Image (cartoon, rainbow, N blue to C red):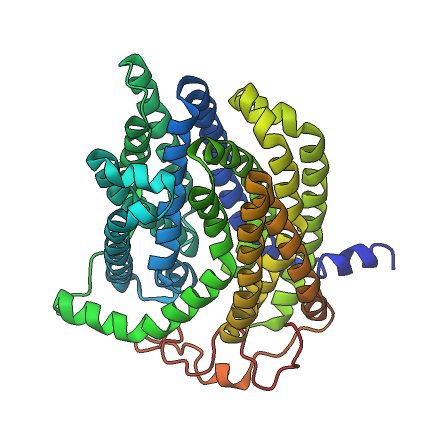
Length: 474
């Protein structure tokens, strides 16, 4: 029948599936709006700072931010993703305790890691050595690291509650404040690395507290002491949170470690050039990633829904990234002139190589979102850990051999090889949705306040359970 092919490609556009698509792409639209607003203001910030501040100062600021992001990734303990996946299934009166308990644990761990980084900074490369040797920069770096994990926690909670406006406002406000503070510093003739790091730290902290009420979290559960209730929350969700953490590190740590590799291996000025190229590449490639994140946020125990959503997001993601790659290859030198002529000279090759990671990450991000939705996290964590190790090794080897451009070359080659290994597993989901494992049936939340809404007592690997699964690359 006419139009059947198009309907099949879209997963069967019937009234029910139209609602599914609307919900999926509404989540996606909020994520794109947030990222788009943040990216535009972020680019304006970089344009101002690169033109008005010395490249070394810009490099030190970028080193502080990338290191803080790495600490937040490792110190999060899976809390942001746990909140994204599970907070909506928690009783409304418990959500504030759920959020604040998880956020406090993650913030404390990141605080300890940031202090440790400052102590070890003399042995962590030139950029961090300079930051650690300056008391003001060191203190701002520690506060900024905590602010980073706080912002990530708020953002993921907003997505999980379908309150995308909170995420949009936090990202936008943070970027605007950072740009405003830099403008004030320029007017005061204070053009230093310390000033740039202060702008970054202040914007994170202020934006978090201003946007926190937008989550609409209710007060705690009456009749229970905060400590006993928080302790129960930790016991209930700790295993699932750590499973999310292992998987998140296995896939996402590359995006933090690659900039950190630049911080550790090259000079502050080269860090500035690499960071400008990395900023543009990551900004362009965020849209395909957000499609995959929307797939996870809208996941369901229905494997048919998962299959239909993948059929919608994967082709769109690959088409988008194809256009992005072509545009970036042609426009790289022109785009980098936004930051100044020396950035175009030193960063064009790196940008052209970095953008080639895009197709590989569409496949990788979809793979992870699918496995999370299937509650098969452990197997995926193993596969992703191997891939991440290869990507990091490639970036480090390239950096040692060929400096700035070598980091991009090593990463792009390793990521592309990894995607080729993952692709068959992704295609199988599109053709034949795998059944949810029997063990999930015993851990699905039951109705009522006593339900284990977040599968807290899962004993099977929750992210990519390998038992009984083909021993291939899925």
